[in-house]
Image 1 (cartoon, rainbow, N blue to C red):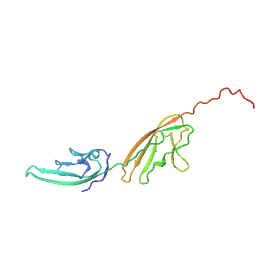
Image 2 (image 1 turned 90 degrees about the horizontal axis):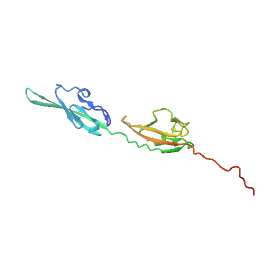
Image 3 (image 1 turned 120 degrees about the vertical axis):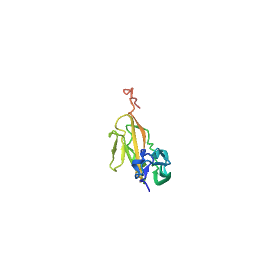
Image 4 (image 1 turned 30 degrees about the vertical axis):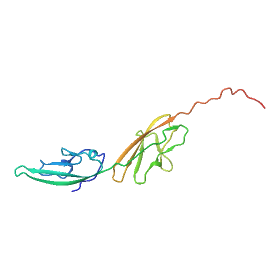
Length: 173
């Protein structure tokens, strides 16, 4: 039997509750990524795996087993490295330029204040907000609904102080 696919970063699952109930319940599950009736997709890694439910009847000492197949999907790759230093008078930074056609990329700062949408419905970071360091997160979800996240810091530098001294001296030609 096949078990619903799962992502590589999915939680450890209790095979006794996740798979169709093996009977009698005193049997054990075994296979790549499984330990003591638990399956860890992170330990197994991406790929297709066989999980076997085994039981030996203690009265007649005869073994029996049922095989299940589990598919662990690889996580999408994401590398989010925007410009890290901006000045307050720089143009807005368009973050949507790193979207891949087969994945959905979402950007957030988890504060709701530094990212906006422009008239082209692109996610932008506006450096006019205030000087400081801002952490931006990019999450990507692929066709298998597996997700990955990356983050980058963007530093906004304040306007430099400029002054002109000696403005009262003028030369005539």
